[in-house]
Image (cartoon, rainbow, N blue to C red; front, side, top):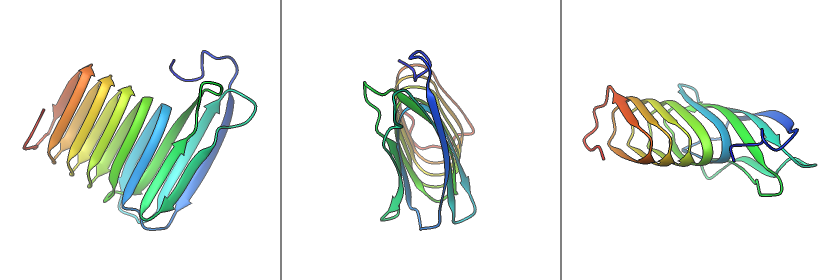
Length: 170
């Protein structure tokens, strides 16, 4: 099941958040959809979020900063299918922890560690200076301009990279 397109008419809700609190880590859980993350020189984070869902009410969501962690997640279940598209601009010095089920992710210009776990979907990383750990069950991993160590595991799919200066590639 890839999202809500096969489940009949879906409702859509869009919103935007701006966070001025200091952020060290972005932690995102997304069951389906697309995630686009771009590091910036600024100190403010902005999140544009579009939720598509079935059912009467939108799913419960979290978008908050606590203890230096910007946490984004959504509560989807079998009764209420949903998918979320995120466009996130935030300080490039952050670490990223992403847990995805059936979602594509593109990450650009991040200086911290990048850890991504995905069941299905492509991963594209560009201009990452920290260490990278990607565990994927199905989907491609594309890397460009990654300076940190790499730990890449892809059960089904391809791994391609250019401009890598990593010490370890698995």
